[in-house]
Amino acid sequence: KIAMYGTGTIGIYCFGELSDFKKNINVIFDDNSSLWGTEKQGILVRPLNDILNYDIEGLVISANPCYQRQMIEKVSEFNQEKRFKIYE
Image (cartoon, rainbow, N blue to C red; front, side, top):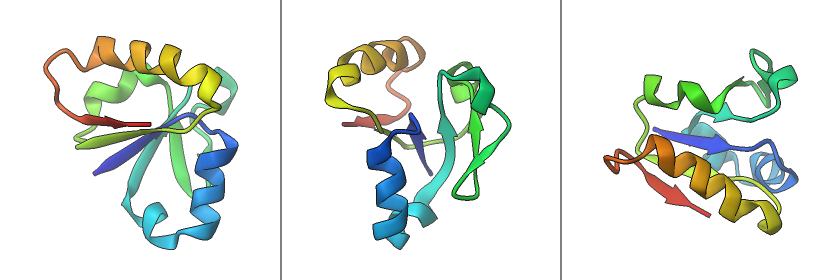
């Protein structure tokens, strides 16, 4: 019950190198509306606004470090009740 936020190179690399990592990812959230409804490595990409519709325990931030703080702030708006853990 893990999701990923961002379709960054790091996350996609992990799919290729760590097959167990990919097995645990249920959904990918991304801010790019042109990716919504598509799949990356066979995993559905959805808008971040849909995050509360998914029962997740952890969220992996997949982005260049220069964007991570901004992304964590956006995610935190949806995680006021600490429903899931955020991994950078």
